[in-house]
Image (cartoon, rainbow, N blue to C red):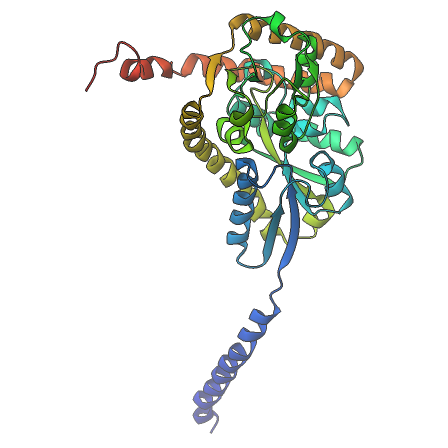
Length: 372
């Protein structure tokens, strides 16, 4: 009798297990909750930078499959652009998208993630220093000294920024004397050292100030942003190449308490979304900036290479600035030393290994190039 009952008993148990699974499946689906995070960028909605912020959010949202949703608002929707850091730290906003240099008024060392020549490092090398050369821990140290409850992710290497837009081309350093100019970060000190009267306006206020004559010149960032913000409508001369912000990148901020409350898998999604967005942004920048550069020329903008004498004056001004700030701020000096050590090694490698791409470009597209 015991032998004959065994198959029937196994069948009953199997059926019970299937029934339990069928009952639990819809319960799991309905139990899923969505964590919504409200972000704000420091950019106007029409700027490509705000688009980059939305690109990052979309990557997170898509990978999280409904478990996490980031909404990105434009600058000023909740707080002014330059108040983003405090708003995220206090939890008024769950996160934000901007640049570290916007916070330099709280600690001058924050400007070193964007302002200045970075000892000859390009933007991607600065990110390499940040992620693998000690920069990330140093940035966290600054935020801790400021008692800010934030978690910072840096990404998105920006192309070298123009020296600026001017009503008249800048041919020599003396032309900068008394020019009312807009920039941010320690670039404020650099242009001031070069004789300009500087006003650090947020991005959305630059073109209206130029139009009303409140400033004579300004820099923002790149061909796409400058075109979308309306620079060519009010100024027709742009000086290309500069050391004032030649190694900048974006910052994604989270309120640390809210970030830490997320499950480990969602935090991993955020981490990898940052890396994916960094690569995607750099590719999109090449595509869009090159097209908008051509469009700006069609709009009558005249581009000039910044004279080497002015570029050397920038480096000389920067040397004075970092010597002064380093004496005033031990963290500033500590970060400079870290950057310099990394730049010396990485710059040697890159300079020795990388071929001169301009040689190949000129071979195919320069004045002496053979026509197909």
